[in-house]
Length: 203
Image (cartoon, rainbow, N blue to C red; front, side):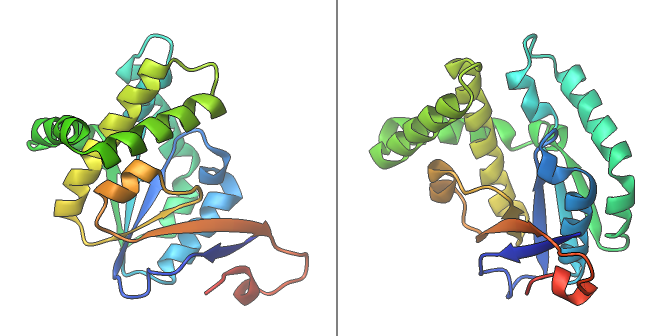
């Protein structure tokens, strides 16, 4: 089991959004199970936002079907963890965002901000530089497409849900400028053998 800690800002929210990066180890197995348990103990509503077809930008052939199949497999692997959210979970797949009626407008708005807001443009440039530095095998164009799509979806999220976002990584510079919701970073430490369940979940 894992002891989970979070940054603050979530206490006044009744809904959280678990942002799932398919393929990342912190969204698999016992670590994700403990994340679901942590969220279930704190929020009446838990949105599980599965970013499966977003990952198509990182695939050699850019195939959405391959990315969607990976999302299907993720749901199957983590079914036991998701059952911990029974009665409070709302599941969203990335295609739900891509097919949202306001997505084209949101994507156009991101392009507009890139042209008129130098602070936002610099934040996007910095995030892309960081992406490529961490993942030198990826094409810069793929990273850019990934990021701009993610930012457009965030605009829709802002208008749709009153939820705090939970994620094990840090928030992107550009995302902080787009989002109007708190971002809480989760961190994990393996629980020592013999510790109680209460100790395993941080406040």
